[in-house]
Length: 252
Image (cartoon, rainbow, N blue to C red; front, side, top):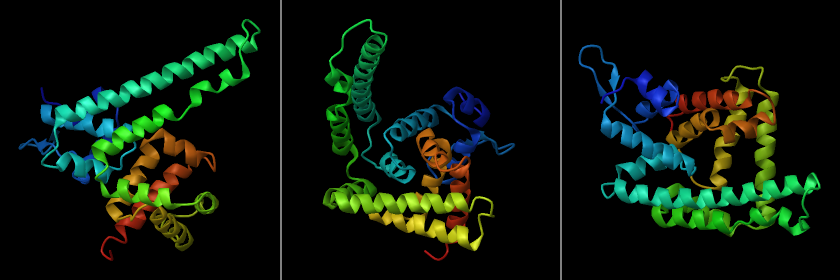
């Protein structure tokens, strides 16, 4: 069965804007109706979109997802098996968290005794480390993943604190400039700092940066992070980053 972009947006619970962006960056480019040029999504497109969404759940950048799906050795069945294992690991961790929540409710309401150490027993990083290992084993060949892991591993705690402090300062500067146009000189100066700050983890490029901008407004985790500085900052960062990319792409 074929779907229009509106129909696919409804059944996949993602925005039309996101589907437009996936098409624009070459991540999901459906066929076009010859009579009106409307996008038509077939079965292969639906399966590819599902893979994109699975990888997004694992925090892969759009450029790395594109590289993975474009690899001639990519096996969708093997990929689904890998996703299945990772989801089972997540479910196991969530089940433990729910168990701890129920115990804590009983403790607070004085219905049942709970040892103090039980308050934290489900916050172990063991499952998450296993999940990270699964991701590394399957997709660790991507350049950003390798670079980020190598740099993070070589950093001291003091270096990490400095980088976090720099990131925090950049976000605060951006929040203070929200009343200005995104092409304002001071705004773009902060965005330039933000772009360069990514080099602490991996070597960024404009396509990757554009994908990151989209994640700032389409991924609630990013949005929540920026909203703690000032309401609307995620959207402001997105718009300023897109302007940065569009106006620097011929000089990179």
